[in-house]
Each structure stands twice: as C-alpha cells, then as structure tokens.
Length: 441
Image (cartoon, rainbow, N blue to C red):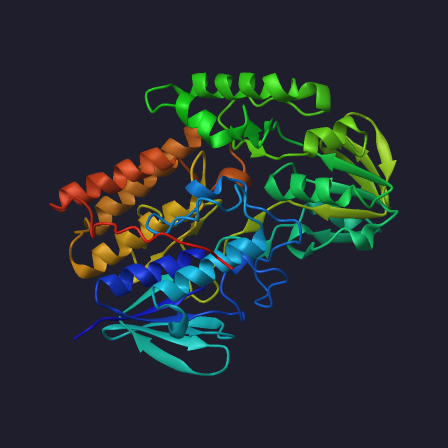
C-alpha cells in the first residue's frame, strides 16, 4: 500500500520534497496557506508569511540557484527577480505534476500523532490522516523586533512588511541591519527618501555581485577550495572585495575577522559614495523620534525599518515537541526530529557559500530515501549525539548571533549525507535525471 504524505508549504522546499516523494511511489498532498506557488518569492504574499518586495532579486547566480535536475535557461538573467523566480517554481511544478496536488488557502494549524501516522488539521476545520509529514513552511515567518523600538514614536515596520519605496518619499528613514534584506531595502528606498541611514551593529563584508565581468560565485569557487582553511578564505574574500570596493571602514562598516555571511549587492556602495545612504553603528538608545548611536551621534527619523530577521517557530506541532533550541534546531541533519518519527523538516538553514535551493533538493532526496527504506537512520541516542556535535561545531565556526543560528557549511553537510548513504549501502537514493528548462514565461 502506498504511503500518504502531507507536505506543508508550496515554496521552493515543499515543491522539491513532493517531487522526490512522488519519485519513490508515495502519494502526496501539499497544504499551502496562500493562493500561489513560490513561498517567499511571491510578491505581496496573501499567506501572511514571507513575502517579496518589488525590487527583490536572488542574491546568488541563477545557474547555482536552481534545483539539481531543473536548471534555468542558459539565456536567462544572471540574477532573476521575484517574478522570474515564481515563474520558475511554477514551471517546475507543472513539469513534475505537482500543481494538481496543492490545496491552496489551506493553513495547517495542528499535526497530531495517531495510530500509524499523523492527523493534519487545517484552519478551515477539515482534517486528514497521513503516514508522514514534511514541514516546509520556511524560517522567515515571525519577524523579530528590536527591543529598543518600543521607545520610537515615529513610523515603524519590519522588513517583512516592506514592498515599495514610494510611501517613504521625502522622509528620513533608518534601516536596521546590514543583511540581505537590509541592504536591499536601503538601496531601494534611498531613491525616494530625503535621507536614508543604514545601521550596521555587526561587522559585514559587502561584496560586488560581479567580479572581473562574471558573477562573484565563479571567482570564489576557483579560490575557495575545500582544503583552503577558513582563515585564508576570509582573507581572500576581504582582499577581493577591497579590489572593487576598498575597505569596509571607508564606507562606515567594520570588516569581519571571523567566518560570517558576506552580502552581495550591486549598488549599495555606490549609493553610499553618492551620499544617498549614510552608515551608522549600533543604537545606544531611542527617545521619541531621536536615535542615539553608540558613536555618540544622534539623529531624528520619521520612520524605522527593521531588517532584523525572524524567529523560527512551529505552532502546529504537538505541545512540547518543537525542535527549536535557542537559535538552533535539534534536528538530525537538519531534517529528522529524533522524537517525532515520520515528521521531517526541509529548508530550515542558511548556507555559507552555496545554494539554498540545491540544499533543499538534497534534503528532499534524503527524506524520500529514508521513507523508501533505502536510507537507514541510526537510533535516537546516536541522533541526539550527532545533533549536539553539530551544534558544538557551529558554535566554533560562526558568530554567536541569531543571524547565524541556522547557518551551515554546504560542503560539510553534503559530506555528512554521503556518509549516511554509504552507511546504508547506497550511493544516493535516486540517480538524478536533468530536465532542461527552455523558458519560464
């Protein structure tokens, strides 16, 4: 009898999870809270979860940001925008027969263990039993707000709610956080504001998106070989960036000395050079609309946009079973919950030098391999020991910050999966057959 699986979410992670489960002969139903495919790439997403802003483009080159077996067309854009990404996911869903499996506007509110499986309850009052569940809701759903913002009396919003710059025309705007969203929004909104300031509390490396006429990933992959120590890689990244942008200090930032996630942006440094964007360090205090920075300066703002990340949560899981442990997740290989057999997680990571989508594809293949019996999991105690070792390794590699709680190294991760496959006596669960995407229009 075929196993029946529920997949929660029709974004990048949920789609590839479904595709791999189908390839192993399982029945799948996808529950999507919104009305469209694409997850965080959907502009003005009606799911209430992550949503794209109008200027959003992918940060990594298209050819390394596709599924393993479904590449972007060779003549497509190097860095697709949100609409092109959404069309890509739609084409993927059509190609592999996934669209008809999606139940749109179906928000899952509870997963309840029952004999032989799990009961999935939906907000509309319906429920259904499944042998297994794949959680693909993403980790960018509940915005994390800075504590000091309660003292601000001007306009405030989280980057989660930002869409376009026009509502901020002529205003003085402070953007908190030099991450991907923060630099995107600062570069976007400065075209309309009277003054834009980017607040960078932590060190950051702003790399050019293109290097020597090609996407930066093509240059970095030639230099950052697996045998190169991370201290050397950090130095190489810093020196390469300096060739194009100069030092971070000359633009108001601090150069990171440890392993951090570099930010790739095509115009931010130019906007700073043109005085369209100012850069300030962390906030000391806020009084009304006046913000005091740790360097002693103070400035008044009409609005603050906090690009301060998200808190990962799973409100639909049985009480007391959430894998969230501080800023990390107690999941074996970031996928398997040791105490909830048959419930899997996909896409709950950030990668340091790699493709999120391809990593999701690897995770989906791993899940399908487990459920088909090709991959043999170790016992619960062995999984817990492995999770603790992974947390210890990550704490030595990455800064102690919520931003890096879900960070992983793609090379190390794939090596760990390969070891799991060898232990199970296989090379990989299913050989990859590449399907060439001719176009996404």
